[in-house]
Length: 119
Image (tube, rainbow, N blue to C red; front, side):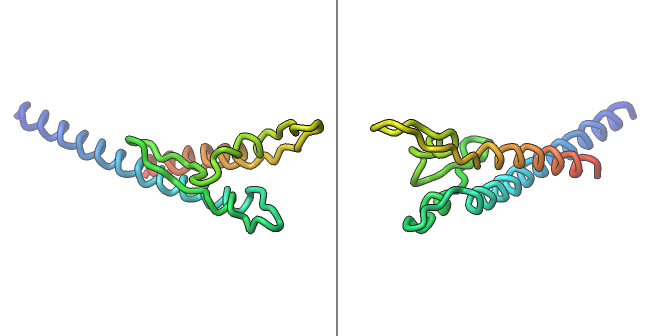
């Protein structure tokens, strides 16, 4: 009888663990997709450039992580986010957009995971 109870408890914990892993994976995908959409809408766009920088945001899976990245214009993300000095003097102002989207993604992920674990 004690063996049966142990097996049932073990099985219940395995089922719960599987459900939590599935919920975490769904939450990661959902929040990453929302972050990409936010970055596409809030990224700086040149009048003549057609918004190529903003359109390049996407996700990439690395192991268990989902990375939000700019596929084609990754070289200028830091320059746009923080500003930079010009070659011949002066400076270009910062266009903070990544840190804002990151903060929203962190908060959304926490809320999503909490709500899924409470059910």
